[in-house]
Image (cartoon, rainbow, N blue to C red; front, side, top):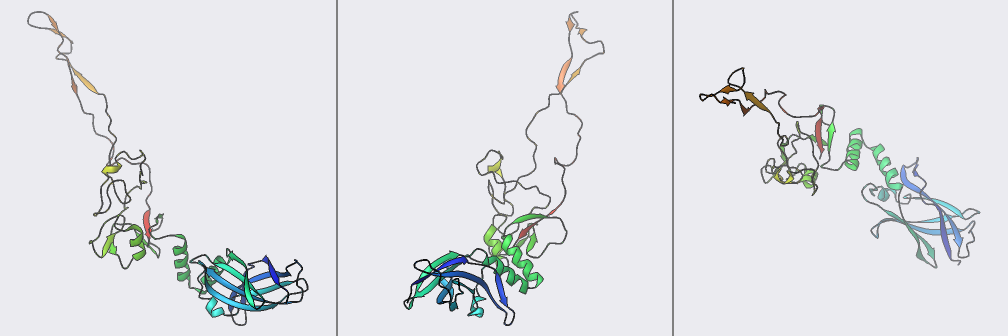
Length: 298
């Protein structure tokens, strides 16, 4: 029996479906050659294919294929056991395709290559089966991790998000969010709840992380028992940077300026006192701004 090896011409072509039984899989195409590099035209080849993750097989199948006159063959990975193949969640982890060929009665490793296009195609295929709400939830979880805060321009908070209003919420009802932010924004009741960030009417500021951009970083205060100092969740009151205005007011005892004293000497009786200007401005110091709702992914 001739020893053979496969030259992989195109590992992943596309997601394909058998319209008769709705089998799902992905196409694999290769060229079978002997050890001298000669194409094995019109030959039978036994192939074992495995979907692996961290060295362990999540799915394995064996197929016997027949090459064409040029040694080319094609098969659909997942077609042997579509029910088992459908349980693989390509959106969660990265998988590899392991290809083995039978040589002398045993399967020998030919190649093990990471699957790059299949997870996206398979995830898209799963999404077409889901309802609109399921698809939206999938997209939200895939692209927006729990704890992510974004500005939202509408009054109605979308599914999967919650308003950053400082509320105390359940640690068990929102486990992913609790894992992400913990009690940085407030300890809740100290046992079963934790606080959301309260960003109502607030500007956001990055943690200084050792820079000089926040000179009062260590004096930042905690909200609802959460983090203080230069940590996520701490807050600061409004403040104006320390500064001075030079302003003096002169007084004269008469409109004629300096006068004579009782001894006839000229005496300057003018004086200078500190004075306060009239108040002006509004209720706070602020830049131009627009209102949004800050929402957080849970």
